[in-house]
Image (cartoon, rainbow, N blue to C red; front, side, top):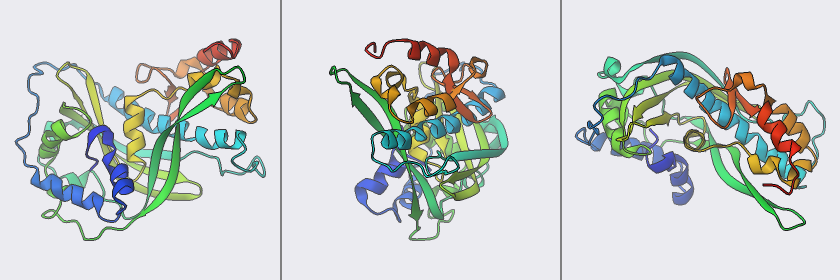
Length: 310
C-alpha cells in the first residue's frame, strides 16, 4: 500500500534509502501494526453524494493524465538536442506509458468492509513502473522564463526480501481497517466512504505488466472536499498521486517561444482534443475513455497569443 504524504513514499523510499527490495513490504508490515483506532474524522455528518460514474471517470482520467504528462518529457529532450532524432515515424521510443483498465467494480467501503486488502491489491513481483515529476524551464532571448511540469518514466525491478503473508504484512487487514488507517496516513486526513477496484495492464517501451489488481479510495476531508487515494504499486504510484492533486496542463509551454522548438508543434497537435471531451472531473485536461488531451479552445487561444505574453 502506498503510504505517506503526497503518496511519495513508494518511490522516495526507494531513492533515498537505496534499498528497493525491502521498503514496500516493510511498509505493509508497519501498516499491520498501526492498529484500527486512528481517527476517522466523523465530524463530516453528511458528505456530498458521489456517483459511480464520477468515480470511474476519476480513475480513468488519472491514468490518462499520467500518460499525457509522461509523454511530454522525451519530446522536450529531443527538441533540446538531448536525444537523437527519431529514426522513423513508426518508432515508439517516445511513446508514453499506456494503461488498460478492466473489470471495474465500484461501491461503498461498508459493502466490502470484512474483505481483505489482498483481494484488491497486489504486491509487486518483477518490474514496476516508476514516475518522477520534474519542473522544466525555458528562458527566451528576451529573458522571459516559463515553466511546466514533466514526468520521467522508467522500469525498475522489485525483489521482495520475504514472502508477504496475512500475518507479517497489511495484506490481511480488512478494508474497513484500511480505510480507517488511511484516514490519517494517506495524502491528507479524510473519511473514506467509497472505492473503485479494477485491474490494470501497463505498457511502456515494449514491456508490460499485468493485468494486476489496484483500487482507489474516495472520501472527504473535514471541509467536505473530495479526497482520492490511488493504490497501484505497479503503474507509477507517485505519478498517480501527483496528477490527482495538481494540474498538468502545460500553459506556459504553449505561450513560450519553446512551442516553436522542433517537434513541439507535432506534439501539441497530437495531444489536442475536442472540447466535447471535457468534463467536471478535471479542469485542466479533457479526458475520454482513458485518454487525456488539451482542449482545442484553450490551445487555440494560447497559440494565438504572442509568445512574449505569459
